[in-house]
Image (cartoon, rainbow, N blue to C red; front, side, top):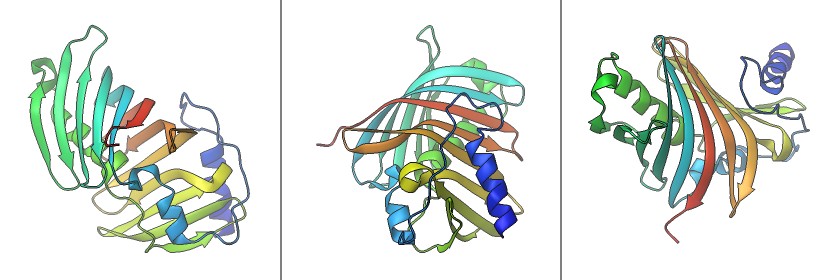
Length: 223
């Protein structure tokens, strides 16, 4: 177990895979931290409605699609809607996603030629913002600089790894017979009482895509 924890720490803190974000500095995990506290620290667990301005690079089956987007996140209801444009202001897609469903309001004809493109984008939105999320019911394991919450997921499990300053969420990993993917979170910043990662990288090994997300601005719009 200790060797696995050391490997995870190296993986998380070296920013491997050529990510364009700063390395997370290691820090001790408080001995008194609980699963409930760790779960509550994840910003998408906050109730309310948020507007997220994003810059995105979506790499899927040989295609590289850079875009900018606005995402409306209704964290209380578990729903998100993303509208994206290219650098010329041309609308690329308009997708609405819940924890279990998705609805395509618009998809540019050029993108519709890429098989399963809209489905991959919707799945990415769901994983980053909606589900799975820690809820405090998970089993907690810890090392001096990492804390992990783990629970069953599908035929395997999902693991949420916390560390760095203030013990924030650094990585989510799902591995079972049907899914194999991970999300890494970088450069946490706190603005208007919202503590969120500026950088997010999602990699799906089985589906063969990678999403690099710059969260330029997150603001609450239901106050």
